[in-house]
Length: 304
Image (cartoon, rainbow, N blue to C red; front, side):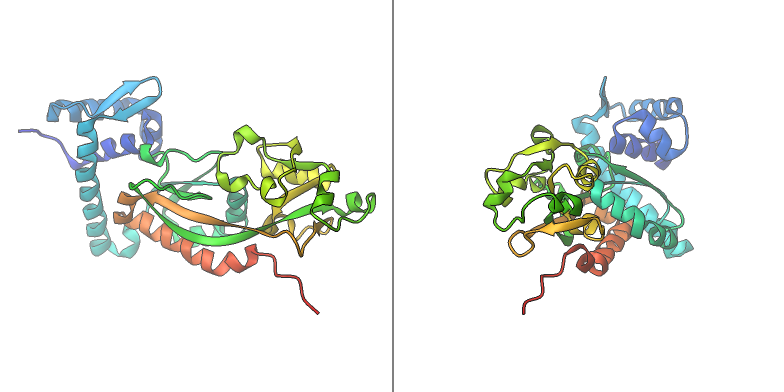
């Protein structure tokens, strides 16, 4: 008969979700040596190999994938028991890793970070803003905000909110050039945009939607580098209203003709819905989206 403890399964889940001993150790607030020893002990007790070790980290074997379903059900029950015995907030603690697009990450930090910690004082939040989506399948993130929800069945996605994008230019740039009255006239101006081969989401590939002939001349994988270049008068740029619309040195170009719409989606592994902590954070983000969503869309120009 195999002898192991629920504590061993917590180490197993941490490694399964992060794919790394160091990541699991950080999550569990211990050393990677301890994590390695506990995984070895669990495998020995079960007489099963749960992970394949390789230079990229720890990847679940077929048996490991089978065990994770059982371990997560046990984890969910443990959280529920804590909540029942100690109050609703007991399940809302620990480390939670969230990945976000760069622009939304900045908005989150400005407007939602303080409310988040007021709501969840016992959650240690790890915010990761990268120009790529971390692999939810390897459990490298607990919750992700994405532009294009994955179609694969292991995930569940819910829309947080829409946001609008417009062509912006520095007022100083527009003062130096004739008025832009049509989309075809956009071809007479340099554009600032993403590096084509580094566009990580189809939702960011929007210059062709403005005009099929537009090609970016000043390129960056960072939306805030694009914003800086626009403010310095290097050209026109498609930017979210919530990032550029409040800046007095910028103006919208062709406001009646060009208004793009995109959405932010909350995406998690389907198993996360059983975890009270992830479930509470998801509810917080969806609630915030309903409240803040209208501020992320530029009002339609007034008609006479």
